[in-house]
Amino acid sequence: MSGPPLLTMVCHCRGCQQMTASAFSLSSLYAQDAVSIEGETILGGLRGELRHHCCAFCLSWTHTRADFLGPLVNIRSTMLEGGSDQPPFIECWLEEKLPWVSVGATHGFARFPPIEGFAALMADFAARRP
Ligand SMILES: [Zn+2]
Image 1 (cartoon, rainbow, N blue to C red):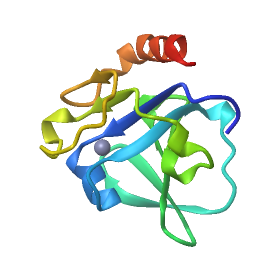
Image 2 (image 1 turned 135 degrees about the vertical axis):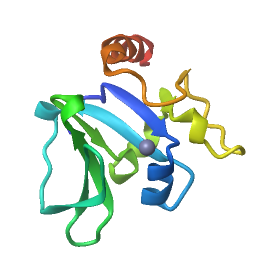
Image 3 (image 1 turned 90 degrees about the vertical axis):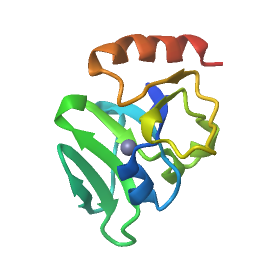
């Protein structure tokens, strides 16, 4: 990864709960040009238009691509050195959130936010970055 993420997020959807065997997924959005992925990946969590890439050796979920994301890649931030220093700025799929979970994100959405709104979210995220 080169440079800071464009946006950080938590996804509370049922699919992410199942993919992580936990309460939610954590991710950081980067421009494809800022990402260099070494090693082979295979697709996992096969559903819909999301392409969830997993390490071919350990099968850990590493990143997600999707046509609707355009030139953006969603990196599983817990897989990164320093990923724990990237708290979630937005949380999505609140309607499927486990009732006892609280992550303190700045923005929340009942489902995945409309992609048309991402430019404004990324601008707000960049403006608040320390
Ligand atoms: Zn999800």
